[in-house]
Length: 391
Image 1: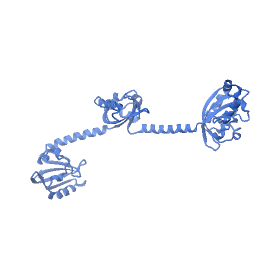
Image 2 (image 1 turned 90 degrees about the horizontal axis):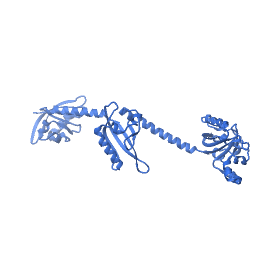
Image 3 (image 1 turned 120 degrees about the vertical axis):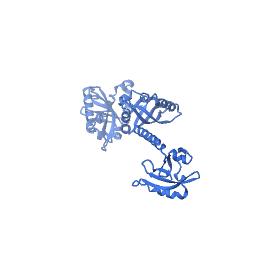
Image 4 (image 1 turned 90 degrees about the vertical axis):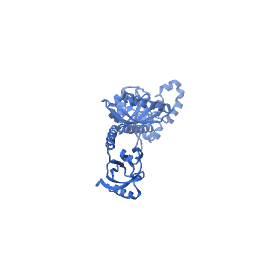
């Protein structure tokens, strides 16, 4: 609202009343006294200004709204009170009003309070300069500062959310209940190779590997039925180039205020490199197992806490066990009590600077106790691997 469009200073109230001819035509001249009270006691600010934006009249609400008394306010220039950033718009509105008699314009802008801060006002301003009985701009305005502050807070919250959404290290999206993408961030686009515009024309079904689709559809069905709250899995997407992308998916169903399903929130992390590393590790472990199973030496691998993690069949067979029965047990269980300190000393001698050690010690299998020649070596993945021969 333009404070300078608040006028009527020095003009009789009758002239202001005539600014609302529609109301008078409906109710007749007898409304004037009541309408005069309405104007004087209105919480909205009613005012008149001239063509140069000089304030001619202001009703008493101006004191509550902008801190000025009516006497202080009348005679001020409306444009002098407008916030500098809003002044070009205010001047444009004024010029438009001056060129079109009878025109009403709605405006929002900041007006300087008597104490120096700015107040957001919303006003409807009508050009009645051409009416000899009024000869002024008529404005009805109200304080919308709280609304503007709430809007700005909402805008900032939305901006923070958008930045978090766009700059997240994981893919984030909203999906319709039928699986269509509604909203995707850039990271998800990078993971699957499509632009955001392309993604919004597709559904998750379109880019899911066929072997993984049934599980995903079953999960969404259960979530919609209320039997599942969240869903997490590893699955494959088909990249825009055709290659497979392994992802870790977390899916949550969002409900509206009535408790009805509204949309899904999906969080996707690219784990292709992890899956590839796991595959290489599995293949390496398999090769290792084949190699050591073919050995005639006794091979045992154990952690720093002496927990056995692997034995070849020769080693476990010596104790009349299979490898799975040995795994998880403490290696000292198979060492006679009087030899355990020696074995521990041998193990403790293994360091990054001295990763290999050789020793002789006794071991027991069943009721048999024999001497072993052991060569132990530390590795990155385990505390030590011992290769032993029965002496």
